[in-house]
Amino acid sequence: MDHLLLIRYGEIGLKGKNRHLFEDQLMRNVRAALGERLPGRVRRAYGRVFVELDDPSHTQPALERLQKVFGIVAVSPAIRVPLTVEAVEEAAVELVRRQGLAGPRTFRVQARRPNKAFPLTSQEINERIGALLLRTFPQLKVDLHHPELVVAIEVREQGAYLYSDQVPGPGGLPVGVSSHALLLLSGGIDSPVAGWMAMKRGIRLDAIHFHSPPFTSERSLDKVKDLTRVLAAWGGPMRLHVVRFTEIQKELRRHAPAELMITLMRRFMLRIAVAVAKDVGALALVTGESVGQVASQTLENMSVINAVTNMPILRPLVGFDKQEIVERAQAIGTYPISIRPYEDCCTIFVPEHPATRPQLAEVEAAEGALDVEALVREAMASVETFSISEAQVDAMQA
Ligand code: ATP
Ligand code: MG
Image 1 (cartoon, rainbow, N blue to C red):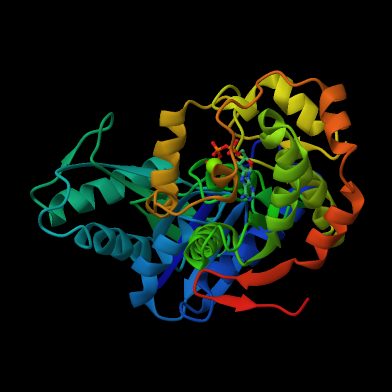
Image 2: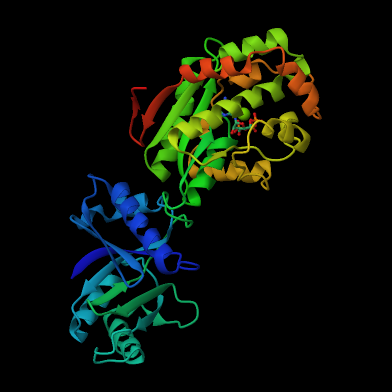
């Protein structure tokens, strides 16, 4: 009797070459998620991925890890046995016994037999195993429609697989199948959720953060590193690029109309983010913007800000209410970090009455008083990059 984890993934729309890319990436990500702490073999067969853990006592922690691997729809602990009726019977009893005394009262057997060489049909398996379980566990009753326990049996070429419980995965696509983007990560609630949503569509992320020392503290930077670490638990190790934004903000305060401050700051952030994205080979930016939340998120403002680049900007939260974003942040695990009360580079310099409908011409005129290119170049020279995994943060050489 081999103990393994059976991974189900979304198959809709996966055909031909895409299907192979998807599966290869999923297997790499599963291996990476289990890492050295939970060693085992990861293999694929007939549209499923299987993990055979070296140590079956790792099942629970492995299940927990796999619940964070995008692309996985569900995971079940399973038993694989040789293709004999006796072995299947023994495994079915073992599967129910594992449920414990406080376990289910009603059950149903659900057999499938793609391997027609097996001596019993699926209906015969259902009946035979059902009768055996009724004899062995007197507390059990059959309920075909709403059973508490489904004993699933799949008879394949390599053996018979039996499983019952399944835990849900996050769904989506394996990170890495959809190329690479750069997440604008503030310390707020929204942008980490936006990054999670992008990863869920298979996008590998780098993150960029703007800070303004000494107006923003080391602790506000730690907060962003902690947020990155939570994202890395879902999508694998990530690089965080930290940009010093102080000089630009000072320059804007000196030379630009206060009510355009936010719009101008955002345009600078975007220019720098585009430059970093090109450096790291990212094809798009991701932000936590949604429409109408704050002054800088009117469509008028967004279009003036967006005018500095034609790089695609993904805004996965655009249709979410704040409450939906908060709930998602709690489920992801970023919420408690996001609400730590440290200052943010943008809140420090915000004017009392930001323009909600700035005109592109007036914004460009205000920038005429600045050496935009030099400011961007200077900010680019300040970039510090950290390599962040779930467990740790490492400074990287530039
Ligand atoms: P968040 O909760 O993500 O901070 P927000 O609701 O506060 O978003 P804004 O302040 O308008 O909204 O910021 C919009 C987006 O701009 C953020 O979601 C983020 O993607 C990006 N952004 C804002 N500040 C920073 C920063 N200091 N560094 C990097 N990106 C930032
Ligand atoms: Mg914010």
